[in-house]
Image (cartoon, rainbow, N blue to C red; front, top):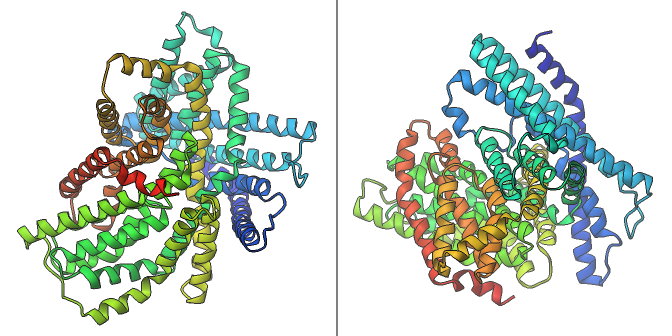
Length: 632
């Protein structure tokens, strides 16, 4: 049997379990939403608490967050930094891709074994939940099955990658693939036998080498989650023992996916996708155009307003780019807009969504640092609105100085403007439901997410804007996006534990303090680092990798954790429009294929400078981000 035939056979084998897992995850996310809404309503209306609601939500979180790991891998949707891979010649790229998949496969096999060990421990000791007395081990077994399906999907993709190496018929590619296989074997062996190192290394040097290995693997295109898992495994093994390393890998992964706090990610994502599927995004754009379309660059400004509103509901910038790009780009093209301005305005406006709730980036930051997610949500509102004003002002001034860039649209009557608002009420209602509930202290971020989903479904059904097919697609995509996020944080937790054990953050803090830098100099140094790393890494892995390093330093310097979180989230999001990564730019380029990538990046430059202006304002006037949280 050829490698490609073997890959096809593995895909067939995992197809029905993956489909079953998807259905299981869908049932779990619906149950999670219903349980959350019931708990909120009963508590606030009748002072009744659903017995065991939190622990049941935690168990359901396992099914929701991990059920589509295999599906996402089959679709090659897991987060990777493939910039260096794309630049490699084929003879290097093919075996490097295969080697990265082999390493990910090995680490997922080890992880599945450790999760199984955890499940057997729970079963053997008859450990049950505190209120309902539910046995925990069946859910942990489900997690192990999902990780195994992920491993099988990796095996299928590995077979395909090796088939590509074989088809290249280049001995150099075969040799490099063999080198990768030997390197993977060596890494796994060192994880289990750290004493096999032929030379002595100090504790500090071991920590530095492990972190270096993590970044090397990430830039070689290894799955971000797998790179962090390998680093944690080998790092803790070198610093303590293999047993501690393996135990940490098993316990931290289960601790993450049983934490009901993570229910906020799939629920907020689902709410946003329902809004998009129901067509409310188009209504938002039409209303924005009626109000400001007559200004210089009015179509681009309207796209900014609508994209900001949509991204804030979706919590994902790429969804904002694709949705608003498909709506607004044809309009701007028809009016003769300069396409550099048109594409750049949408790519940058979508980043406003990361500043206002529900923001996945704030959720990640809050989970890493244990800062209140509700306060982070509220803290991002004024910076998000301020950035929208800055972008609109920039577009207006540029179009006024050079009308050829962006002609004015027609002026709408006040009747048309007011009538256009009628179509935006669902989005405004959901924002009020989410923000108002959190700000008033009536609900937590998790509960606001559940209410948001219920509200979006109710409005969509009552307005007959959501078909059954669209409803299913919104669930399936929510599960896929969630799996891609949570699998990173699963292993980021183990990675953070390694960082803490290594003591590197303490030493880094002492080094910076020894330089006798002022508070603002420390901020500038950290922000410059984020500008650089943002050029090569997407927002999510950048957050996960760097916050454990810089947060202790920021707290030692006396910064407010909420204020620092706003700054960090803005800076990592700057990377999505910064070359050479610029994922938002790549996304908008798929919708405007006639516009060269170079031209889009040129168009982004003025907006990139506007980003720096926003950061400067928040640094100089911290109350921009701290005023609303101070009222909570």
